[in-house]
Image 1: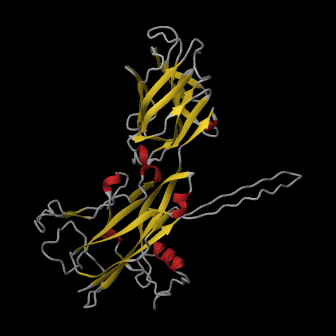
Image 2: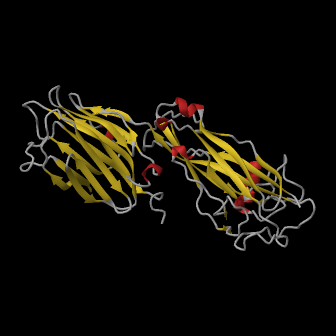
Image 3: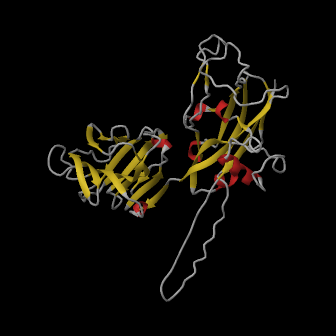
Length: 419
């Protein structure tokens, strides 16, 4: 008995924008235009497994890349996407004979099968439960595979009797980022062909599914599945900004300070602090610190979503505070604060979650670095680290030279806490 298995690829991107201006006695027209292009380029050629046989194992692959227009746009940096499985319509330049869906286009046929997958006059018997999507280039360490339903603990010894089946949860998730030189992903689609009910070999595990409700004949039967690649998030590129412009239009959650203070290491005004923003700014942890003029000192700030722990370290001093659990943040924004050539701050050799980020020198004013973060980047929280150097003459002030790191725009992180 033969089965012909057909797998289609599709990509869906939805963009919605609206602007409304209204007043009681006058009207104004704002001309709003946008040129919309896809962020991803997907090899949408069908993956046709052809004629296969029960209990065979087969693989196909496809590639997802950042589109040329996305690569050329300096404002954006990375894309997150998900690969979903959906019922596949039978479509050969129109609905097949016997199908009463009324679909006039393949898009309408897809929509019909999404709501009526059991109608085998219009839709393929689903191949989706038997497919996996595995990261084909795991070196980038930022993609999540959707594993196979068929588990073989000892693949080097096939049919050893320890095989079993389970229902894998979740979808395959991918991320591409120009800043990390990761502009393409390879995905391997593998298929362990299930047997027909009533024609099951003795070595097929009892925990594994079979094809039921199918008329078995010499011609076999066709199965199909559509893979949909859906963009879930696009992040902007990091950029520097003067004074407080980096903070405009976004909400603070907490931030840390390293400042000159009075530079007395064990008394007087504090030099290190963690601040909470809850409608106002409140110091929730502080300590004294003795800076050495013009000498670099290591620093780090981290947040752990599992317990809410915030840890801020400068030199040998560590401040601790507990924030909410299971959170992510839209932006991390370090600031260097100065006032003239002799009183300025530098942040350098910095990394964010292990990835290098640009240096900041306050010069004669304040300079910040606005860095967007995705939820996937914060599954284990975040850590920003580097070296801070304060430079001053006899005119140092309490806050200058100094630096701050702002953590902005909190929201629930379902990637970190899926429960």
